[in-house]
Amino acid sequence: MKEVEIEAKAFIEEDGYKTIFLNHPELKNHIYTQANYYIDTPDEDLRKSPLSMRVRTKSNNFQELTIKEDLKEGKLEINQPMSSEELVLFLEKGIIPEGEVLSYIRNKYTSISIKDLKVFTKLITDRCDIKVSNGLLSIDKNEFSGITDFEVECESDSMEHAKVILFTFLEKEKVPYIENHKSKLYRARQAFISQNGRNNPHSNS
Image (cartoon, rainbow, N blue to C red; front, side, top):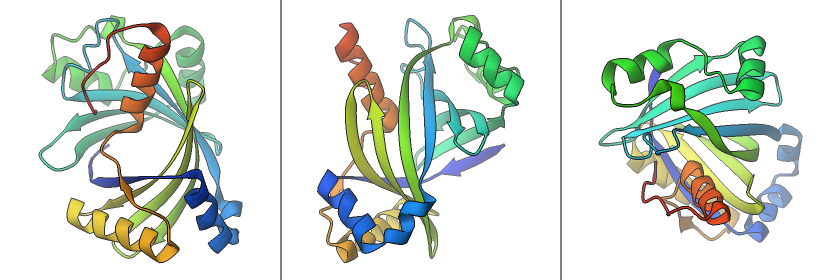
């Protein structure tokens, strides 16, 4: 399934994260956990292209393979549901299931070696979603490579709307707004590279 993702992000401090749940204690009952497994080749072919790739699992038995491609505003997102059997093969043997995602790479990015695509790092998120007019807010606590950070994301129909919704929400909650241009993938990759002594990438994909 193809869709365009337009999303604004803001970092928040741990105190700000706690403030949101103190203001809205009922939200604690709606926190769920998701894991992102980030994929690339040993030569970082995806990082060097407009693409990023992940498998995401959620605590409600949801699992999905996704590829994102940078657009002028937002990202083209192709989501491919995974069966439980496909997830096991992926986690245990690194086998990426055939389907729309790999077909898109083969057809448009012929230089990328499919057989070399492997998981290089993982990020765990405890998330709570809040539906708002013209958008969806997500309150996130992220853990990766021994690092914990906190952020709020807003998806909407334009970047302008997403930023306004996000800023308005945090202002109302009295939580400082720290604009974030670095994706979860970028931060997880940087932390992985820092631990493994490789050259730092420059992509924010």
